[in-house]
Amino acid sequence: MKKEIPLLIVLICGLFMAIQFFVPNEASQFLYRYALDWVIVIGVFALALGIWSFTKVSYDKISRRSENWPYAVVALIGLFGMIFSGFGFFGGMESYMYKHLFQFIVVPIQATMFALLAFFITSAAYRAFRARSALATVLLATALIVMLRFNPFLGPLGDPIGAAASWILNVPNMAAKRAIVIGIGLGMVATALKVILGIERGYMGKD
Image 1 (cartoon, rainbow, N blue to C red):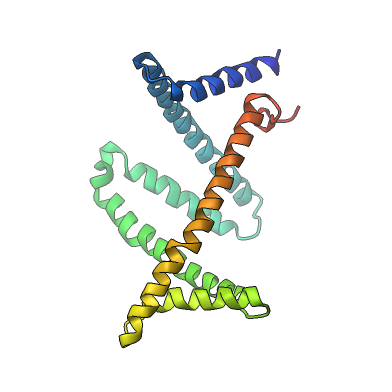
Image 2 (image 1 turned 120 degrees about the vertical axis):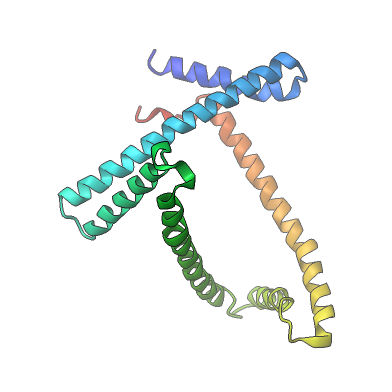
């Protein structure tokens, strides 16, 4: 029964969430909204579990003096500093401490991460766009056209390049995006059916 009851709950909930979408009824809509409220509650518990897991892993790294353990100390201080500074008795999200921690630590860190990401993307694009074959040459030319449309120094060439870039984005690129989205949708449906029917049981842990 340890396996059958969870599988039965997943089957009933999965079938209900799939069927109610096609039932335009007030009772069905109420149950759907009620289920979404429970999703939010479960998400809150998942957040608490994530904080506990992160704290435990960081504490174990500090206690064992593992490699780069000082970073774990900084991470824990930052985590609980942001949490406690956002509490009501400190003034909440409008408090001096919370605003300064966010504006002068979190925002610069995010900007730094995005700046580093730009260099990684440039490096990956250089490796991917080297014209070693006909397809790579087409990819390189297409990427150049799309990137050049933002260049303000092209002068009269800007209009035809912009038109070509718009056609690339709206026709072949859009077709590829739709194919990818359709593939993702089919994969989601297949995965959902496997979970509902009990074929996929990874959420139950080890059998």
